[in-house]
Length: 484
Length: 155
Image (cartoon, rainbow over all chains, first blue to last red):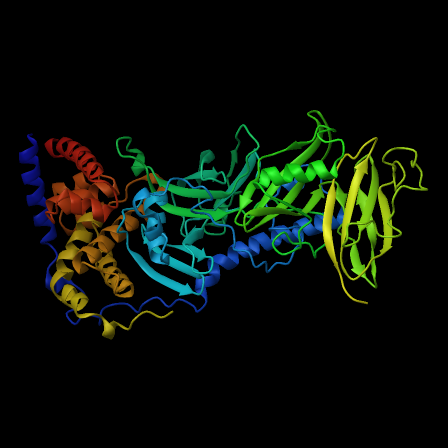
């Protein structure tokens, strides 16, 4: 049969079949609206549901991390790998902007013709995101935009499933995407921001009975794809028959460097019923940003976003971090000090450091920096297996217990605002090991060190090292000292 | 947030409802094969369009897209164990014809594309907008659908 003949026959059949339905067959609806079902009522505050859900997940992680730190210092890589709040135990209500999922710092390529226009309003930013990231047509309908100050929610429908995009901006700046949700899936945050990492994908309340393929993608801080993988997600017991219950599938992603994950995306993919000739399309989209590595084990008053600096210098975050380590570790670059490229998050940056050789690590931690004007400043540094979270300032003293799981010895200094050691600071003079260039305030093998150092009002700097012939690690932070 | 009351529908949407509802129900019926579902889908599409007002620029195009999306979604949800769920029982009870059999061979997107081109008579660009894909994809989908239909109709 020729195509033209087939098309003619098809038109005739379709019209014949459609003619079976006449006006009189329809439910009475001549008066528009009478036969129309009531509109869906959205509860007030639904605009915040997405943000609250993400915040709740992050809070759970923060609480879990805090509990872990209280019980024991984390292992070398645990704290670095765990996505965590912005700063080690810092205030939850940081004035810094939340992490963005899109566009990322240096960005996956925004269309060059009008970047500023694309991010000028929540609707424009949402449309740009749906078009460039999700792959929908540029004019895809957005049903509703709710804007409240510097936050907005764009609601849209994709394949009859409601979805939304949460957006934010910094003080009249461009709008960016914080997260995206779909009723089809409920992914979890990655178990690590370093390779390898696992992402579990639970079915959402609207997951299809037949299930669907979900493609998970993790992105670097500049928007590059670090890794992606696809898994099959089926409705689980929560949303289907109890007999169908099963664990959420887990996707394992890995990449061959130490880059960290800045954002995660999960796309529900339509395979067009196995039709190989038609490209797969996204029929549901979820995304979230990861706030960056946490700096664990520090007092709750320390916040990279707000605490006063320890060290400032011109240059990039990487250059400032290196200059800082040179001033603090007199035998730098011994003992095999290594600094990773900075992980930028808004006005902050994080640089992972380590000492020791590969296979014989000594210690590791994170340097937190903040930019002010053109200069970067070091705000706080931690060592993963040195816990100083017990230290506090009260009654004119900095006091508390420092603990470690490291085999090397603890050494602590407390400095006045003029950078001189505070009287009574547990320097090594008179202590066991004083004959060494760097003695030990705590004895070899001691896993804790108590300090109670009188300090002047204002602020004090606490510096803690692991020592063993030289300084092996660095923990440093500034602590406010109130008037007595 | 509560959507607009039906009485507050904008005039263009009311006009579309009065003049195009039957045609849209027929479109949904051709895609789903179920007239009752088709009516519900069209009702839902008008409700969604009212809620989306005033972002609706072309009333009929917007409602039509909502109807096609709703029809495809309904088919997808009925696709138990990844089988196509064209309502053959309903179609055959009403009046069997060769179309009810051959459309059942198509996947939801192919079915929608065929209905939009050969019943609605839409150009490929408009079909692409409704289906949310590129024009080239529309041609691919229809080409493959015709291939399947040719085989079925000739049997």
